[in-house]
Each structure stands twice: as C-alpha cells, then as structure tokens.
Image 1 (spheres, rainbow, N blue to C red):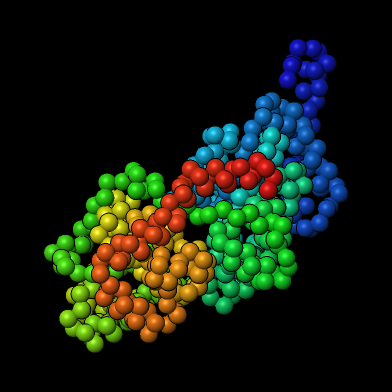
Image 2: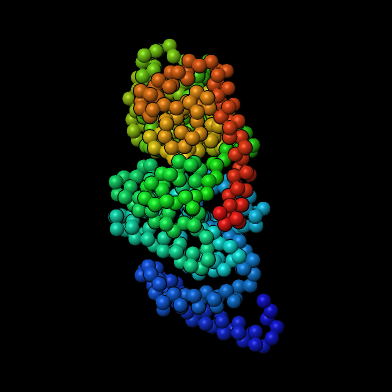
Length: 422
C-alpha cells in the first residue's frame, strides 16, 4: 500500500480514527450473545475490521492455521503440521477461542483455517449442564462468525464421546459432537468406520464432509531418540520371559484392571508361565492401582509398573524389549499405542472394536479378542505359546501394511487436502 499522496494519507488517518472510536469487542459480544445476526452489532464490528485491515499492509499474503486445543505433550499435533512450511502456512495454537481483534484480523489473511481437535476442553470444567451448553454454543458461535469472514473450519474426529465422561459430561459431549459436525467444512477421519459412526450418531449423512487421512506411524520417535529403559525396569527379571507391553497414559477407558485380572488368571492356573507384564504410563486410573495392590505377591512379581509420564527415549526403549503390545481398551476410535507398536514392528493384542477391526487381521497382523476378560486371558495364553519367530513375523507383516504412513506423507496429504478444498 502506498502512502505517497495527500489523499491517501488523509484516508488512512480517517480509517485510524474510525477504528479507534469503535467498540469492537463489545460489538462482537452483542453478536455472539444473541447468536443471530444483530445487524447493528454486526455492521459495527465489520466496519471496525475494515478500518483495521487498512492499517495492516501485507496481511492478505499470509496463510494461517489456528488449532485448538493445544496438547503440547501429544506429538500427534506436532507431526500433523510437520509440512506447513512447504505449503507456506503459519501454524499456531489457541486453548480458548475468543473472537477478539487479533483473531478476526487473521480472517483477512490469504487463507485462514481453524482446526478443531478434541472437544472435551469446551465443557469439561463446566459446573452445570447449562453452563456447559453455553460454553459450547459460545465456541460454535465464534466459528460461525469466522466462517462468515471466509475462514475454513475443519475438525479431526479423535473420539465420538469422551471415554472417561460422567453422565453430565456425556450429554455435553453428545451435544458438542453434533454442533461441531454441523459447523465443520471438513471432518478428518482416520478410519472408514469412524465416519459411519459419526453419521449414525448425528442421524445425518456427513459423507461429503469426510476427508480420510491415515494416522501416521511414529517414525520421528524411532528416528530421533536414543532408546533407554526406565529406571523401574530390572532387566534381570525379564530374562527368558515373554514381555507384554501396555504403554501409554493409564485411564479408566483403557481397561488396565481387565488386563491385570486376565494376567492373574493365567498365573494362577499355570504358575510356570513365562510372561512378564510391563504397565507404563501416567497412572490416571485408581481402579488399576487398587487391582495391583490386591494381587498375590507371587503373581505381582511378574508385573512391572512404571506409573509416571515417560519421555520418548524411554518409550523407544520399552518398545524395543517388548514381544507384543496389549491394548485392552473398553472404548476406542483411534489408538496411538497401536501405531507406536507398529512403528517398532510389534504386534498388538486388541479387542474387536474401533480402528482395530480395520487395521488388524486376527493372527495375521495382530491378535483380536471379544472384549471380555475371559477372551483377553485366552488370547494372552495363545500368544505366549507362540514361537518368537511367529510373533516377529506378525509384527513385520503389520509394519509392512503401514510402513508408508510416515509423518511426512500424512502431513503432506493433510495440507494437500486443504489446498484442494477437499
């Protein structure tokens, strides 16, 4: 923008005066509180932004992605945006979306994409059902306002209903899912079944919004870490044992008490078993803690608990010593633990639910069971009787089916999809 002539300078000065005289945030607050097009408030807000834009040269050349929430400890988000520079996007997080000056100014960039991940942060701390509904509506109202400015809204469906929700939170989770599905331009899914579940849940055909992108392997961890074992691991206790690895944050939906019970049944029936179970991750399930404390000492000595957050070097070290990964989940849509195990060519024992029904062929690329404790116990016994060469063959086969799912490939496909408008 040139500032060379007297008329241009006068125009900019007028724009500056008009902008600073307007109650921008108040105008949008009125708009959002009414959740319909309040003409006066909307006009005032639009005029303020037009003026502000005139004072911000170059913004129309930028391409931006704003994502929320920011789970800094979750490498999935970091990996998904890995290729942003190659597509000339700037990427930044926001934990709580507010329709303020800086956010609306971003809508005047060449391209603005708002990318929603997990929905629970919208309502999890709400003191009541009404408060949770209001928080969700406020967020969706902001997204509608952004779309009216030309922004694209996309959502990655990580889970349908939050796995650890109580009765009130489950109602809010249902409400948030339906609202988010409605407002989204693109819904990214990692399994075909996830799309079918969401359409059924919302009682509407959402096929035109679905964008299928495979979940990547964790080749960054494999490539950049120096594997080491946590200090809680005693290598001498693992000598000659079949090592079962349950790795990841321990939360109620992950069914770790079921795994402990299944393991105990085998140990009671066959005291000469050759298994050793490692449970590693931040302990967020009191029932799992109780189950471990109540175990018979002779059985408990064959379980190692690393009940804390692990760094990536420790995760790599544990995956290297594992014979098989165990994911005894009660609920799941997509499992990062499966992709981590697959990265290290380790087969997974999993229930016949969620993504496992698509990613695993029983006894060929992993091991499936019916979701019961009895079924898990039987499958553990079966796997522990298999020759080690068979487990290696199954692990290599599942890795072969997924080896093309690198971080670079998945991130490239994500940005290519955005650029294509599909």
